[in-house]
Image: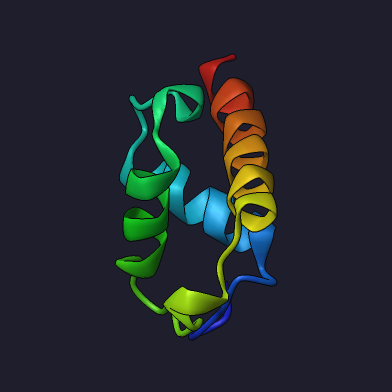
Length: 72
């Protein structure tokens, strides 16, 4: 993962969320919480105001894919 990253690094965000919240099913996370969690990730340097529903949905789906891969 790059030392800092923003909203354009969907896969990096998804992996970081899967690492930080390994037991959390991404489909159960509200977008308000997802936004907060992404902004709190170490190295996240994106503008919190640059987020939108489409970006959060892309993060959620990438995280869900990572979550499923890890569940076996």
